[in-house]
Length: 188
Image (cartoon, rainbow, N blue to C red; front, side, top):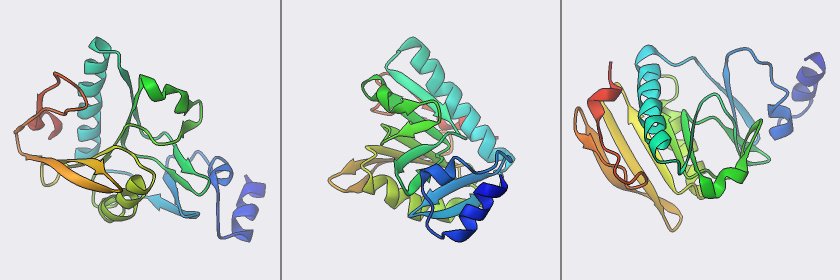
């Protein structure tokens, strides 16, 4: 621990090896362009939305074993200096080789960011652009405060909004054939 800390103090540019030396202290750390970011613990509505959406996707995948959904904290290593922890990640069976014990090494099929006061700006700007840069095909942004869900797909090198749902509207994600659920299942 002290050896790792002194190494971090010596260099301002960190990599994924440094990331895995961070303490297991319950905080969420992310590495973007070699810079370390720590986000405060999420609030209750954030956690309820993550839990509910993960249950919906896990139940679907139990009946349709086309991949796996993983909840944070779990590292997604996009490059040596880009390690993030989306709230939910979906990896199809075709990409299961990316999943290792310590993280996903490469671009998953879907990342889901659930917004809270402490992460809203980071998730909507830096991480959103990073996912596009590393060609993550789909990104969903869930906002429990506004009760909205935005679904983006990568077209060329930019995300295009394909659906925005709010309140208790029905969601039918094209990625999961036959799945439909009411957004009200995600809200407190």
